[in-house]
View 1 (cartoon, rainbow, N blue to C red):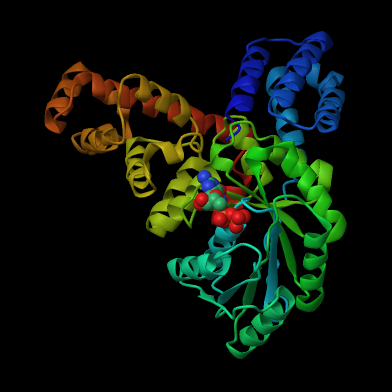
View 2 (cartoon, helix red, strand yellow):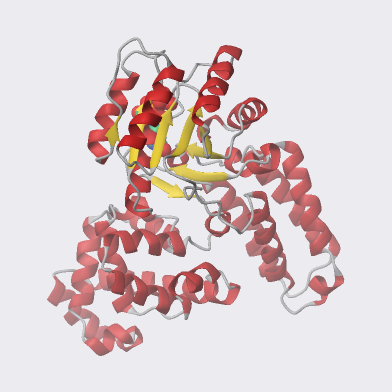
Length: 445
Ligand code: GDP
């Protein structure tokens, strides 16, 4: 996600940070490069222009240029503006507190991932919100669409409305609401029909369904890989139905990120969720602050910790979060993370989420290492003494040899692990300095 932009901005910032003093011309030069980077990421032109204007105005202020760390300050300004562009610091969660059954209407074009997302969200609502969900497919246009939702419902353990052949969308919606009431369902998800293109018949159908179901949420599902088209689709829909938010799918394959970066500014609609894979738990709440952190290579520690919390013991996640918030990170912490990585689906899944991991992963790939490496690393740390785990700098040549022998690895593997730890520890410190863990502090009190 956002790989290219991330790399480009990283280069610009390295140069800015590397200099003791900056003048206005330096900043303007950097802004030109950032502008190109945004356009290459497929950000809508007016959005890129507004972004650059806002950042430039703040960054060429005398307070910034005269400060001791002007480069760092410019990075912070870009970061804050990115957060704004992505929708602001406040996360727009799902509104589910109205009188049940709360109706969540899913709309979008065919192939956008609407049906999959409906099932993912139903699972999310059941697991994360602890609410009883039900799903109903109103898609009578695409053959087997209703059956597809029923199959997904079984997979995510959420009931689906029984199919009545020949019934039309508005009638299905009415029946679904009745059924949801009878079964004391908290949240009813309506998976509406898609079309290949936005057309009036589709809009009329959406309006009619919204008319009878009075949805609390109307979520538009769009494919982030379609870039500015996704933004255009959102604009077309928002003129016709009262959209409350957007779900961007296939973020896992989107190296550019233009749809995510332009959506809020162009349509005024918040991105509420991001689809990050084909599996039914591959959905993430969209937090602008965290995404900005990720783009700027500060690592998405909070998402990481949340993910960890879902797969590992809560105490462990909490402990880790507290250590990270303090900028502390020893080999015990690394080991805990390695185990979590294994639980969470290995390296590929996590690269880019964890500070320093991107580089570490690239280094691993270069030397032909893969997920087996996680197991080796765990063994290496296991062969060290408690003292060494807490203070890795104690590892000398002799000890490295012993540890390598003890863990069935080579001294160079031990060195690689220590180097990776160093990089990560450094990144943690940096995050702490930049105050990038505000959300974390709030989460863990
Ligand atoms: P619909 O026509 O809009 O209902 O689309 P579907 O829900 O049937 O999804 C179409 C395809 O996209 C399926 O193969 C899904 O597995 C896939 N898909 C949906 N969301 C994501 C996502 O976030 N990432 C990836 N990689 N694939 C997705």
